[in-house]
Image (cartoon, rainbow, N blue to C red; front, side):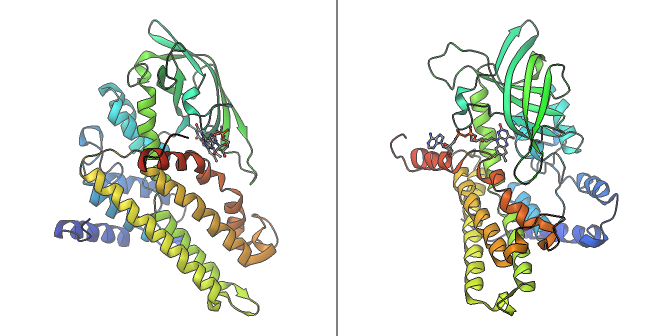
Length: 386
Ligand SMILES: Cc1cc2nc3c(=O)[nH]c(=O)nc-3n(C[C@H](O)[C@H](O)[C@H](O)COP(=O)(O)OP(=O)(O)OC[C@H]3O[C@@H](n4cnc5c(N)ncnc54)[C@H](O)[C@@H]3O)c2cc1C
C-alpha cells in the first residue's frame, strides 16, 4: 500500500478545498435553498457519481480522487453530494454493471440529479438473513412480470419513487440461490401498498410493502432472469462498504469530543477524566483501523477487482463501534442523555438518545453481525460452513 499522493492528486485535493472555501458557509448560515444550490454546484463540478462513466453523466474520475473528494467533504462537514442515497451507493452501481443501455440512460441521470429516491426490497417476513429463500413471486406474462408477495423493513419506502426488488421467478430449483430475479419497480405502480412501521425512536422510515398483481415491464428487469442473486451480492457489497464508510465515523467522533468538552463529571470538565480520555483514544484507534482496512478495499478496486466478502469486516466493526459510542455519550450525560428531542434537558437536541435507540440501522440493516461473522469465517478465513 502506497500512502503518498501524486502531484495531480494533491492538486485535486486543493481544488476541492478551494471549492469548499468558496461554496460552503458555516452550518448556522446555511439558510433555505442552500441544499438545492449546493446540489447544483457539486453536480456542475461533476463530483456526483464522480467515478461513473461520462456516457451516463458521471466523470470517469479515478478512485483515489473519489476517496480524496469524500475525505475533504467529510472534514468540512459538507452535506451529501446527492439526495438519492441508495441510488448513489448501490442501485446506480448495480445498473451500471448489469443494466441495459436503455436502463442506464433512463435511471442514472435522475439519480445523479437527485430527482428520484430508491428503496431496497430484499427482506421478507421470514427471509432476512436467509435472503436466498425469498418467496415474493413474479410470473412472466408476455411483455411484463406479474408480481405478488410482501417485503418488510424496507427503508425509505414511505417516500421512495422506485424500489430495487428481489423476486422469485422459478420455484423449481435445486439450489435456492437460483431462480431469483431483480426488478426495478415504480412505487406508484398499481398494486403496490406501503404500510410504514414505527421504530423504537418513534420514526417511520421503514415499512412493509405489499405487491398485489403488480405489472412490471420485462424491460425493467435488471440482469438476466435468474441472475438476481449475482446482482444482489454485488449490491450488498456496495451497501456494506457504504455502511462501513469511515468518514462519517470521524465526524461522529468530533461531535462526541465536543460533547465531552461541554460536559462536567463530578464537578470537573469530563475532558480531564483519564477514563473518558482513554475511551476517546480507543474510539479514535478503532476508527483509524477501519480507515486502513477501507484503504485495502480501495487498493483492490484500483487493481480492477470487485469488492465482495471483505466489506463485511468494516460493516461488523462499525456496528459495534456505533453502539459503544452512543452508549458512552448517554452514560456521560446521565438521565438527560436519555431524553429525545423536546425533553426538558435533552442533550444536543436529543440526538444521542435517538442514536442509542437507532442502532438497528447500522447493526441489522445490510445484514446482522452474525451473518457478517459467518461470511468472514467461511469466505475470508476458509473455515468450515456454519
Ligand atoms: C433499521 C433497518 C433497516 C433495514 N432496511 C432494509 C431495507 O431497506 N431493505 C431490506 O430488504 N431489508 C432491510 N432491513 C432488514 C434486514 O436486512 C434484516 O432485518 C436482516 O437481514 C435480518 O433478517 P431478519 O430480521 O429476518 O432476522 P433473522 O434472519 O430471523 O435473524 C434473527 C437472528 O438470528 C441470527 N441468525 C440468522 N441466521 C443465522 C445464521 N445462519 N447463523 C448465525 N446466526 C443467524 C441473526 O444474526 C439474528 O440475530 C432493515 C433492517 C433494519 C433493522
